[in-house]
Length: 65
Image 1 (cartoon, rainbow, N blue to C red):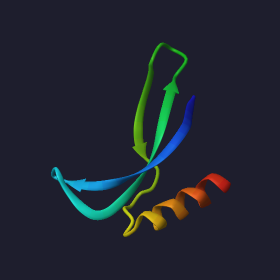
Image 2: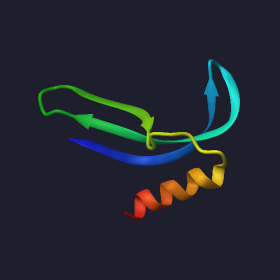
Image 3: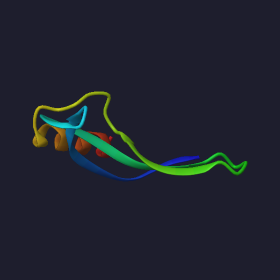
């Protein structure tokens, strides 16, 4: 079972250098029921955003379904 627990918005880095874009991430945990468990931050959106507010609006729409 895959479960998303929290979200965050972070500055997007390309090859270690900060850019003027933002990315939305979710902290995801998983358990396949056969001993394989894990936890990691994963992208919540398939793209980057030009502003923090755009990323925030995306997460709001995503969370409110």
